[in-house]
Amino acid sequence: MMSSGCCAPARSDTPREKTQASPAIVAGGGKRPDNPIFVRGGRTYVGTGRPELPQDGEAPRRPVRVKDFYLEAQTVTVARFAEFVAETGYVTEAEEFGWSAVFFGLLPPDAVATGASPDTPWWVRIEGANWRQPEGPQSSVKDRQDHPVTQVSLRDATAFATWAGGRLPTEAEWEHAARGGSADRRFPWGDEEPDEANIKCNIWQGQFPDNNTCVDGYMGTAPARSFEPSAEGFYNLMGNVWEWTGDLFRVRSVSRMAKMRNEAAAAGGDRTLKGGSFLCHISYCYRYRIAARMNLTPDSAASNVGFRIAFSDL
Image 1 (tube, rainbow, N blue to C red):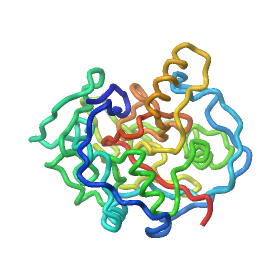
Image 2: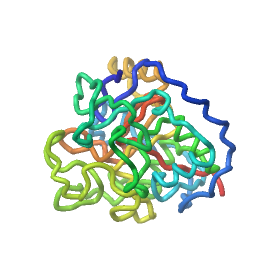
Image 3: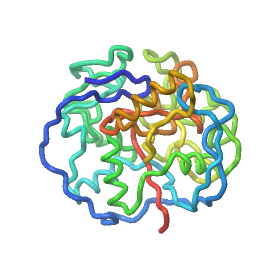
Image 4: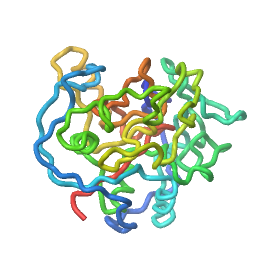
């Protein structure tokens, strides 16, 4: 089934139906980058000295160096992922498993859940949920072509990035781009906290998980180019969907809890995701900050997980 996760659930060891083998992806065989933004590298840092969720490994703030790179202005959309699948015949992991995790507030009235995470019952298992039908067979992406593609695993995101001639960003690159270099700011727009009177991104409004007032206009995902971009031109780095990075997940701490979490993450090959999602709220999941992070097993997919791609050069 699924193991518990507050932001997105991880798959446990369950068999998958190999409907067909996905073809080898030709690097750079797809269309060229979509609105890539040049990011000047140099000395920068990862993390923060003001952690809100220290158990997630937000601290310590540590110096790193990144090379120049490009990062796309928005997450990969449904329409663009559809082009990739049409050209390559790629089959996603959710399609191979035959089910995926769906947030219960998005379910069609006649949807049937076949399981749920015990500690987070708002995550349910829906047979037939995948990128084409994110909430199961009764759903469609027909009216969401400009929204971020969801229900994609690390393998799916990596395959697309390879096809587009790019890769997933590192956590350091993602944070460096979100901060606009080495600036010290909590959000891409500065330190101003978003709320119902100051809407900056697509996060939860109301009382989680049963009442979303949707003041921002969205119950689920918003279009990839909604809300004001950062000064550098990036859309929806905060909220909307969690974004895969290429980095393994690790908490830098000597505490016993951190050691146990690192061991579990290493056993599952967990990767780091950044940015939070439409399900985040300051009272429940304050992870729509630049330093915030989440870990997820690489074969997992959910209603609130997507990606954007980076390029070492163009």
